[in-house]
Image (cartoon, rainbow, N blue to C red; front, side):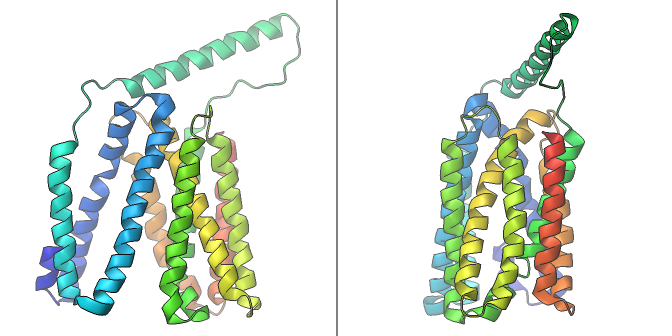
Length: 319
């Protein structure tokens, strides 16, 4: 698909090719998540999701740097597409050699059984304390999967609203030569997030982390308002906020992937990508629309911050 890009200058055909390529790009997500969850035990899911996502972030970061220098100093856009097509073919060959299906598919089923047994056991414990007339300081509560899905859509929506017009905002406050560097630092923050999230993945639950991260994203979306009003520090402030947001996104994704493999039944692993895609698609339209209105980027930051906060409420309901 990337190679075919070099043969067209027609906008309609370009959009069709890009849409089809996006389908192929997203199609690997659900099988990847299932492979990781079935190849490793439940307690190792977080660490291995963090390792995978961190490794892909390294690849993205290297690609950003190489793409920038290749296009700026050496290669034309067409030759850059040839290079990318070749790298994708190498990735195909390596995946055909090294990626194998797990010999048995049972880990997610065991986790589902374990969660059911734990809930029943906890219910018996609560009932016995009530029958004995003892006080209770805990609740018998199942996870609210609907709230989880709503929170995920809203988080993706807010993220897309905030980051789709973000390159334009950064370019409006920073010289052209350092815009690229700011987004590289953002990617570096994500790398740190994946590393720390992998180390912390042995904890019993990531629900508290998810809610806290979403609330923090809400706060930092409002902090970006200061970058519009403090001209002497706007570049430094925006860089710091974007770095922290990259870190928070990485932590969020590691825990969300692990939780989704626990919650989503077999055969529907792609549902998480549907929810993220719905929010992302709508946000990619709404973000630039808000930025083009009289409220400008201030409106983008406020709307994103409010939606992040609503997502936080849903994740608290889920937990």
